[in-house]
Length: 444
Image (cartoon, rainbow, N blue to C red):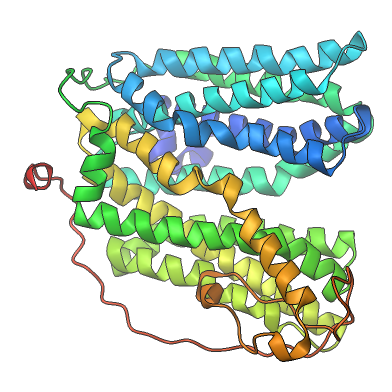
């Protein structure tokens, strides 16, 4: 037993962080169960169509856009953020339990599903903006990278095992009943958080411009401004890419659902490996260069998707490689940038900056699929002479151009043709990234 304990990372030997990490991990598994069970409940029980599913997804995403700034401002005025997180967990468990209860009495409706999706999303925003403050209260600054690597490793593990657990529960039980497991994970998270006592920073005093101070500080700080601009751009085009990916892989490349699932599973394995090597990468390269490597590793491998051609094994191998390498890059980027943000952010602004981050990086998600859908329609409907012969400008960010069929207006399925692409190159200067926050930036 002692030898097993000695092999654990140092942070996991500390009781407070171990419980915080376990609460985070079990909640992530519940999230993966919900990602499968809630849409399946809408489809299998309520017979949802495409419009219904779009409304459900919008209800899940809107809180990040509408409430993140307000939640961050409210949380920074609270002295006990951990208690807010526990309350959010308990309320989410109660809301999720109401779905199988309504199903059991044959009273489940779309209105309830939309309302719960929105409310759970709002409570998740509240939980997440508190999480940033509790994290730095438990972890010393020199261990931010290790702590973030452990949290992101748990996220990758949830991506590996969570969908399988969710699918098995839906198979054994009805989809709404499977949500009881998600409610149980919220309860476990609340219990674990109740057993830690971090020394949280004092609440921020009310000042003029308090509500928007987090956004203003982020936009004035050169490193944070550049990081959020780059991250938001990449995420927007990555969402466009994944909006098209399933359609492209199934209709153009002819992959079946089983092979597609295995390709996406390769991404989860890549995430685990990325989390394992992130600490070594930061020690070898430094935070700034690791962030740049993460951006490149996240986006560049996805160019292999429009290059996939030839025999079926060649196509599958290229898609596996694209998902695997991209997920390694995502983890390097997430761990290094998360550690940098934690180190630069002043305690008095931490929740407001977390809210600003969610607004800038996640609030646009409901709009990202529309340009992708419009691009597919315009490319599919254009005559051969009017189609572009190169990838669109966002190719370097991971959005790929589908292969062009013979001209048949708006035909839904096309025979694959040999792809052509455009290569782009450039040089990026690495800024001198500083870890320590100095008041100079607040006055700029």
